[in-house]
Amino acid sequence: MLRYVIKKIAYGFTVLVAVVALVFLLIQGLGDPARLTQGQRTDIATMEAVRKDLGLDLPLGVRLLHYLNDVSPISIYQDTPENKSEYRYSKILPLGDRALVFKTPYLGRSYQSKKRVTEILREALPQTIILGLSAIIFATIFGILLGVWAAMRQFSFTDSSILVGSILGISQPSYFSGMILALVFGYWLRDYTGLNYTGDLFSTDMYGDPITQWKNLILPTIALGIRPLAIIVQLTRSTMLETLSQDYIRTAKAKGVSNRIVVLKHALRNALNPVVTAISGWLAAILAGAYFIEIVFDFKGLGYETINALNNLDLPVAMGSILFAAVLFVSINILVDVLYGWLDPRVSYD
Image 1 (spheres, rainbow, N blue to C red):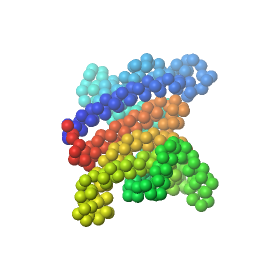
Image 2: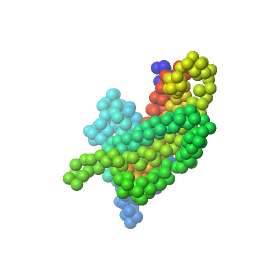
Image 3: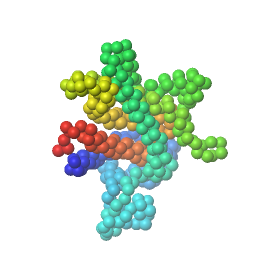
Image 4: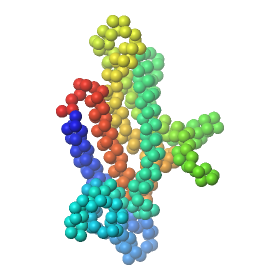
């Protein structure tokens, strides 16, 4: 198993390097950050000074190598007090005026605010994590319950209604569901629901004290969870029907085992293996969907910061958030692969 995990980590690292290189090259063509920060009427000398300060005067390949060196935990830098303060590294091996160092990945500073990107992400991340987890928990719980309910009542009106609802859920993009929910429950029916069509999870009151408004999480969670819920419903239903037709299920029923025990103890666990895989696949979609949901509901998380960074050509913030999302996705996939093998003893780690 350890060999399998190491192999997966090595593969994930390769994927991350490829993602960083590809995204870095793509977003460099979005525009000139120096011109955006200084305006259209800035003189050429000032523009060139700003480009040099931001490192935009270097060739594209050199900038990519510098960025890879920054995000790598083991890097090479000129060993100066300024670099040690900025990159916060521990020296491993002196190399003349340079040094081989160990550090946490350095994501640069925002072109707009000059804050460290890690600080910006640290402030935005909790809201996105809470939103993503609440959406997947909502989708998983209700998706499995509705899927089992539909399977136990195959060909009934309940089964047909659940299937039609799941098809509608799959066909709607998350941002469209978000706009409908915001309009209906956050605007038209606001007096009855008490919900806001926009709003942040964390804010401050009139005295400047921090407050958490959990009700602002309800509509974004539902909007983000509708599509994965619909997928989980259909997958749970189909796998439950297949499992219930197996010989060992019929044998258990013939021995007088109650239907509840047959479903919960024997059928459901085996039926959940493909559902777990589907959930892992939807984690990436949920993370991507959260970017648009946060814009719809003015929910200031990672997606909100990323979209704003792209609009303002704040490339370090955009790259940092994309890299973090890629690391999270790869890590979750490795964890789910291991979990899948634990759930199904037939899966080999070789």
